[in-house]
Length: 233
Image 1 (cartoon, one colour):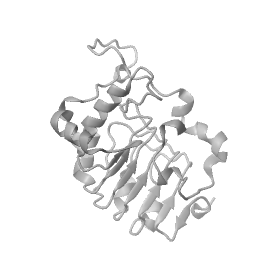
Image 2: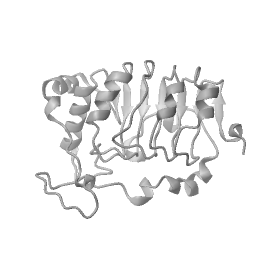
Image 3: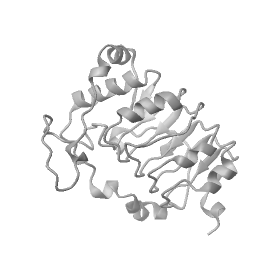
Image 4: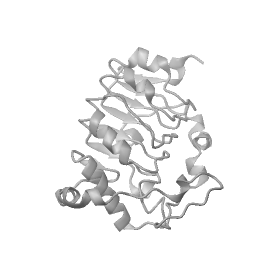
């Protein structure tokens, strides 16, 4: 199949490459569209790295939902990026990522991390409550004070004041699942995050629902153009 048969480029500025089970960003995407693409959607792949983003020099929106991105996630310098959604990946400890984003995405104002173990949302972590989630928000906003929207909610002035005052002490603890197999680790925080059901975490399972995801859509209901509401997860 030719590349352009499974790719949508709207006026060359909005690029979608969804559901191809790719483990790396294909070189042809950056080579063909990198200099003028402003929106890039790479959802429902098997990405563990975003190294190929270095070609996308003017990118403003990046959607990498439903991939395999983990705590070692690194981005190139993206001075114009204002929207980043990394929903349903494999983030368990976001402190390094937040510090990295503060350096390489100075214009970032919209961030969504729902569906990761590091985001203690009750819908994916039943053992967590609203207080856990709020502490997580304070910590994220402490690290990225320029954010205007986090996950499903707009950032309030009260939240920002609390984040500035106490956010540094709200770090979310790594879950016990970080321990290697067959190794028992003692911890003073006995409640690990409940991981997503296997069906939700397996990127290949999207095929039956999305007809192999060989179609692309845009508009106000597109996942890349909005943040997921709690009742839609």
